Image (cartoon, rainbow, N blue to C red; front, side, top):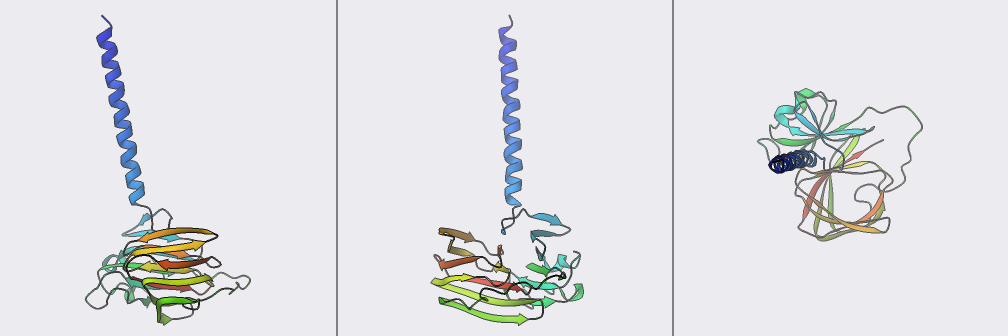
Length: 224
């Protein structure tokens, strides 16, 4: 007489296990969707998403309409879509909230953190555009005491020779694309989407080759 109850308990246990699995998979998907392109977890910060936050810089993905409502200091605004007054990639320096996000569309905001006192940092390495390259171009958009902002392009099959970064450089991808990177004897292909952000750390060394369509980026090199 107890067999039906045993079958019922087994079925209920299986249903509970399936529900736990579904919950786990849903949570995993949410975490994956919130991962910043810099490789660090993204997190909400008011009406923005923080995709990179370390001792030197904070990078937000937001919109011009929302940026005014987010606490921030001076920084670089990089529109990632064409707007009514600025084109995609026309980066500019915003000294305060009143000058940030003049276009309402999506943007990346690169906020250098205040300098700290201490010993001078080493400047070993090369600046963007100094390494040997083929099929690439670099155009300085603006420069101040805090950053240098550069518009860069890798044509199809473009190559950049082995180089060491002299500064921490934020790369804001405008077009997306596929770049083959070789560093420390390891080669891998990184695939980027428009609006993705990556950090090229000072002192890191690599070579690069475009293995897809032409790639457009904005480079924000920190001066510290």
